[in-house]
Length: 236
Ligand code: ADE
Image (tube, rainbow, N blue to C red; front, side, top):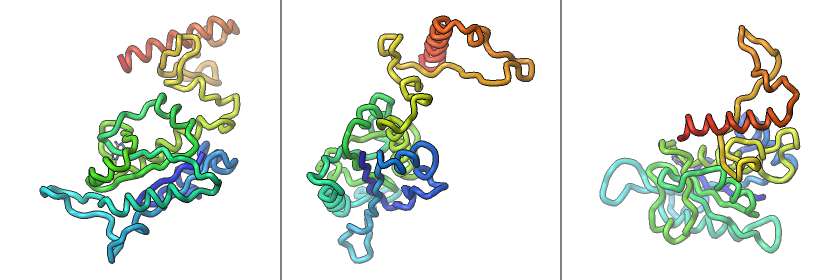
Protein backbone atom coordinates (compact mmCIF):
# COMPACT_ATOMS: atom_id res chain seq x y z
CA UNK A 1 0.00 0.00 0.00
CA UNK A 2 1.11 3.56 -0.68
CA UNK A 3 0.23 6.31 1.80
CA UNK A 4 0.75 9.92 0.78
CA UNK A 5 0.63 12.59 3.45
CA UNK A 6 0.08 16.26 2.72
CA UNK A 7 1.50 18.31 5.58
CA UNK A 8 3.47 21.42 6.46
CA UNK A 9 5.64 19.17 8.70
CA UNK A 10 6.85 16.37 6.38
CA UNK A 11 9.80 15.66 8.68
CA UNK A 12 7.36 14.05 11.12
CA UNK A 13 6.96 11.19 8.63
CA UNK A 14 10.65 10.39 8.12
CA UNK A 15 11.34 6.71 8.61
CA UNK A 16 14.75 7.06 10.26
CA UNK A 17 14.64 6.22 13.98
CA UNK A 18 13.62 7.47 16.44
CA UNK A 19 10.64 8.55 14.31
CA UNK A 20 7.36 6.69 14.70
CA UNK A 21 7.75 5.06 11.28
CA UNK A 22 11.38 4.10 11.94
CA UNK A 23 10.71 1.60 14.73
CA UNK A 24 8.76 -1.58 15.40
CA UNK A 25 6.04 -2.81 13.04
CA UNK A 26 5.72 0.23 10.73
CA UNK A 27 9.47 0.16 10.06
CA UNK A 28 9.24 -3.53 9.15
CA UNK A 29 6.33 -2.89 6.80
CA UNK A 30 8.36 -0.13 5.12
CA UNK A 31 11.53 -2.24 4.93
CA UNK A 32 9.64 -5.20 3.43
CA UNK A 33 8.04 -2.94 0.81
CA UNK A 34 4.52 -3.71 2.00
CA UNK A 35 4.05 -0.04 2.91
CA UNK A 36 5.34 3.10 1.25
CA UNK A 37 4.89 6.51 2.95
CA UNK A 38 5.48 9.65 0.90
CA UNK A 39 5.14 12.98 2.71
CA UNK A 40 4.68 16.11 0.61
CA UNK A 41 5.21 19.62 1.94
CA UNK A 42 2.10 21.69 1.32
CA UNK A 43 4.32 24.77 1.15
CA UNK A 44 5.76 23.62 -2.20
CA UNK A 45 2.34 24.14 -3.75
CA UNK A 46 1.66 27.62 -2.48
CA UNK A 47 1.28 30.11 -5.31
CA UNK A 48 1.96 33.02 -2.94
CA UNK A 49 5.25 34.91 -2.88
CA UNK A 50 6.28 33.72 0.58
CA UNK A 51 4.92 30.21 0.18
CA UNK A 52 2.11 31.00 2.59
CA UNK A 53 -0.33 28.18 3.21
CA UNK A 54 -2.68 29.81 5.69
CA UNK A 55 -4.52 33.04 6.44
CA UNK A 56 -6.69 34.65 9.10
CA UNK A 57 -10.26 33.37 9.42
CA UNK A 58 -13.11 35.41 7.91
CA UNK A 59 -15.38 36.55 10.73
CA UNK A 60 -12.44 36.92 13.09
CA UNK A 61 -11.28 34.69 15.89
CA UNK A 62 -8.02 33.04 16.87
CA UNK A 63 -5.73 30.90 14.78
CA UNK A 64 -5.10 30.51 11.10
CA UNK A 65 -6.90 28.55 8.38
CA UNK A 66 -5.20 26.59 5.57
CA UNK A 67 -6.14 28.17 2.25
CA UNK A 68 -7.84 26.31 -0.60
CA UNK A 69 -5.33 26.84 -3.43
CA UNK A 70 -2.27 24.92 -2.16
CA UNK A 71 -4.39 22.06 -0.81
CA UNK A 72 -6.33 21.69 -4.08
CA UNK A 73 -3.22 21.88 -6.27
CA UNK A 74 -1.17 19.55 -4.06
CA UNK A 75 -3.90 16.90 -3.93
CA UNK A 76 -4.18 16.81 -7.72
CA UNK A 77 -0.39 16.77 -8.24
CA UNK A 78 0.05 13.95 -5.71
CA UNK A 79 -2.78 11.91 -7.17
CA UNK A 80 -1.32 12.19 -10.68
CA UNK A 81 2.08 10.90 -9.60
CA UNK A 82 2.70 7.27 -8.71
CA UNK A 83 5.57 4.82 -9.01
CA UNK A 84 3.27 2.42 -10.87
CA UNK A 85 1.05 2.74 -13.96
CA UNK A 86 -1.86 3.06 -14.09
CA UNK A 87 -1.79 5.35 -11.05
CA UNK A 88 -3.60 3.90 -8.06
CA UNK A 89 -6.81 5.62 -6.98
CA UNK A 90 -6.35 7.56 -3.73
CA UNK A 91 -8.77 7.38 -0.84
CA UNK A 92 -8.72 10.95 0.42
CA UNK A 93 -8.69 11.44 4.18
CA UNK A 94 -8.62 14.61 6.26
CA UNK A 95 -7.62 14.19 9.90
CA UNK A 96 -9.77 16.50 12.02
CA UNK A 97 -11.49 16.43 15.43
CA UNK A 98 -14.74 17.07 13.49
CA UNK A 99 -14.40 13.73 11.66
CA UNK A 100 -15.96 10.31 12.08
CA UNK A 101 -14.35 8.48 15.00
CA UNK A 102 -11.55 6.13 13.95
CA UNK A 103 -12.29 2.53 14.92
CA UNK A 104 -10.75 -0.85 14.17
CA UNK A 105 -13.57 -1.37 11.66
CA UNK A 106 -12.55 1.79 9.75
CA UNK A 107 -8.87 0.76 9.96
CA UNK A 108 -9.70 -2.68 8.53
CA UNK A 109 -11.59 -1.10 5.66
CA UNK A 110 -8.78 1.35 4.86
CA UNK A 111 -6.15 -1.41 5.03
CA UNK A 112 -7.71 -2.95 1.91
CA UNK A 113 -7.22 0.20 -0.22
CA UNK A 114 -4.33 0.45 -2.69
CA UNK A 115 -3.48 4.05 -1.84
CA UNK A 116 -4.42 6.63 0.79
CA UNK A 117 -3.89 10.38 0.78
CA UNK A 118 -3.91 11.80 4.29
CA UNK A 119 -4.31 15.55 4.55
CA UNK A 120 -3.05 16.79 7.90
CA UNK A 121 -4.51 20.16 8.77
CA UNK A 122 -2.80 22.43 11.23
CA UNK A 123 -3.81 25.60 13.05
CA UNK A 124 -7.58 26.14 13.22
CA UNK A 125 -8.30 23.90 10.26
CA UNK A 126 -8.77 23.91 6.51
CA UNK A 127 -10.99 26.24 4.46
CA UNK A 128 -14.30 24.36 4.28
CA UNK A 129 -14.71 25.01 0.55
CA UNK A 130 -11.72 22.85 -0.40
CA UNK A 131 -13.03 20.08 1.86
CA UNK A 132 -16.42 20.35 0.12
CA UNK A 133 -14.72 20.21 -3.28
CA UNK A 134 -12.38 17.29 -2.51
CA UNK A 135 -14.99 15.23 -0.62
CA UNK A 136 -12.50 13.40 1.59
CA UNK A 137 -13.36 11.04 4.39
CA UNK A 138 -12.95 13.06 7.61
CA UNK A 139 -11.49 11.11 10.53
CA UNK A 140 -10.89 11.93 14.20
CA UNK A 141 -8.77 9.86 16.59
CA UNK A 142 -10.64 11.09 19.67
CA UNK A 143 -12.51 13.92 21.30
CA UNK A 144 -9.49 16.03 22.16
CA UNK A 145 -7.54 18.58 20.16
CA UNK A 146 -4.02 17.94 18.89
CA UNK A 147 -1.79 20.67 17.50
CA UNK A 148 -2.34 19.23 14.05
CA UNK A 149 -3.47 16.22 12.08
CA UNK A 150 0.07 14.80 11.72
CA UNK A 151 0.06 12.74 14.93
CA UNK A 152 -3.44 11.53 14.10
CA UNK A 153 -2.20 10.55 10.63
CA UNK A 154 0.69 8.61 12.17
CA UNK A 155 -1.76 6.81 14.44
CA UNK A 156 -3.79 5.83 11.39
CA UNK A 157 -0.70 4.65 9.45
CA UNK A 158 0.49 2.56 12.41
CA UNK A 159 -2.91 0.91 12.87
CA UNK A 160 -3.08 0.11 9.14
CA UNK A 161 0.53 -1.12 8.82
CA UNK A 162 -0.05 -3.99 11.26
CA UNK A 163 -3.02 -5.21 9.21
CA UNK A 164 -1.22 -5.34 5.85
CA UNK A 165 -0.81 -8.92 4.66
CA UNK A 166 2.46 -10.47 5.84
CA UNK A 167 3.46 -7.66 8.21
CA UNK A 168 2.66 -9.51 11.44
CA UNK A 169 3.90 -13.07 11.81
CA UNK A 170 1.48 -15.80 12.91
CA UNK A 171 2.70 -15.46 16.49
CA UNK A 172 1.53 -11.81 16.56
CA UNK A 173 -1.60 -12.24 14.47
CA UNK A 174 -3.88 -9.22 14.58
CA UNK A 175 -6.95 -11.50 14.70
CA UNK A 176 -6.57 -11.56 18.49
CA UNK A 177 -6.22 -7.81 18.89
CA UNK A 178 -8.66 -5.74 20.90
CA UNK A 179 -11.63 -4.69 18.77
CA UNK A 180 -11.05 -7.41 16.18
CA UNK A 181 -14.23 -9.25 15.28
CA UNK A 182 -14.33 -12.31 17.61
CA UNK A 183 -14.81 -15.50 15.62
CA UNK A 184 -16.09 -17.35 18.75
CA UNK A 185 -18.52 -14.58 19.59
CA UNK A 186 -20.43 -13.96 16.37
CA UNK A 187 -18.11 -11.16 15.24
CA UNK A 188 -18.48 -9.11 18.45
CA UNK A 189 -15.76 -6.46 18.83
CA UNK A 190 -14.33 -6.77 22.31
CA UNK A 191 -11.47 -5.41 24.39
CA UNK A 192 -8.57 -7.80 24.87
CA UNK A 193 -8.29 -10.14 27.87
CA UNK A 194 -5.50 -9.85 30.48
CA UNK A 195 -2.19 -11.56 29.65
CA UNK A 196 0.41 -13.17 31.93
CA UNK A 197 3.93 -14.54 31.55
CA UNK A 198 6.74 -15.83 33.79
CA UNK A 199 7.18 -15.99 36.73
CA UNK A 200 4.09 -17.91 37.93
CA UNK A 201 4.18 -15.98 41.20
CA UNK A 202 5.22 -12.37 41.44
CA UNK A 203 5.07 -10.34 44.66
CA UNK A 204 2.39 -12.63 46.06
CA UNK A 205 0.27 -12.47 42.90
CA UNK A 206 -0.24 -15.64 40.92
CA UNK A 207 -1.34 -16.37 37.39
CA UNK A 208 -5.02 -17.49 37.09
CA UNK A 209 -5.13 -21.31 37.48
CA UNK A 210 -7.03 -21.88 34.25
CA UNK A 211 -4.07 -20.58 32.20
CA UNK A 212 -1.84 -23.25 33.77
CA UNK A 213 -4.41 -26.04 33.39
CA UNK A 214 -3.48 -27.10 29.87
CA UNK A 215 -7.22 -27.27 29.10
CA UNK A 216 -7.31 -25.34 25.83
CA UNK A 217 -11.10 -25.14 25.63
CA UNK A 218 -11.36 -23.84 29.18
CA UNK A 219 -8.71 -21.22 28.37
CA UNK A 220 -10.60 -20.07 25.26
CA UNK A 221 -13.84 -19.82 27.34
CA UNK A 222 -12.10 -17.92 30.16
CA UNK A 223 -10.49 -15.44 27.76
CA UNK A 224 -13.78 -14.75 26.00
CA UNK A 225 -15.50 -14.20 29.36
CA UNK A 226 -12.73 -11.80 30.43
CA UNK A 227 -13.06 -9.87 27.16
CA UNK A 228 -16.82 -9.54 27.59
CA UNK A 229 -16.54 -8.48 31.22
CA UNK A 230 -13.88 -5.89 30.46
CA UNK A 231 -15.81 -4.52 27.51
CA UNK A 232 -19.01 -4.21 29.57
CA UNK A 233 -17.21 -2.61 32.51
CA UNK A 234 -14.96 -0.26 30.51
CA UNK A 235 -17.07 0.55 27.46
CA UNK A 236 -20.61 -0.35 28.56
N1 ADE B 1 -6.32 17.17 14.49
C1 ADE B 1 -6.33 17.79 15.68
N2 ADE B 1 -6.93 17.04 16.61
C2 ADE B 1 -7.30 15.88 15.98
C3 ADE B 1 -7.96 14.71 16.40
N3 ADE B 1 -8.39 14.56 17.65
N4 ADE B 1 -8.18 13.75 15.49
C4 ADE B 1 -7.79 13.91 14.22
N5 ADE B 1 -7.16 14.99 13.77
C5 ADE B 1 -6.91 15.97 14.63
